[in-house]
Length: 180
Image (cartoon, rainbow, N blue to C red; front, side, top):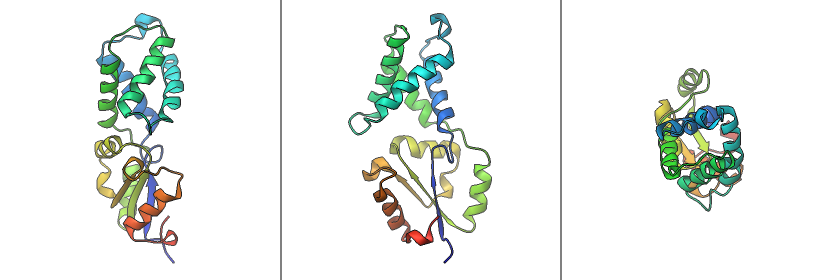
């Protein structure tokens, strides 16, 4: 039996999540007029501390909204680095806007998708929020390649849970053997 469809992951397969996140983290600081240099902090140090908190807080994404999680990450990072600001809410809003409206595509993604789209049905399964993943695909200009986009938030199951894969297969009306 030959494959009829190919299902992709979004982050770190089609889009470079780390670079997208880095742009949003630093872009939000700039938009809010917070200079790391004035506080004696370099970007690498800030990003390292931010990521430590952010990865811890995002494990609680079932409990908190994206805005709350981002605020918690900035608040903890700024406190640890002794940077005072009353702009935590603005940082979060700017981060979310920048993150959702920009994308860094992995190398050769457009060429690969264009080549595959002629022979296969294409789909995406991604963990995250609909309000982030769909606009990011649009910002990257790749959404038109995909017949189905399954976002964990929308269906209540995240990878690696089998349910998210079963949901995608059901939407495609295909069996596991027909999909790569």
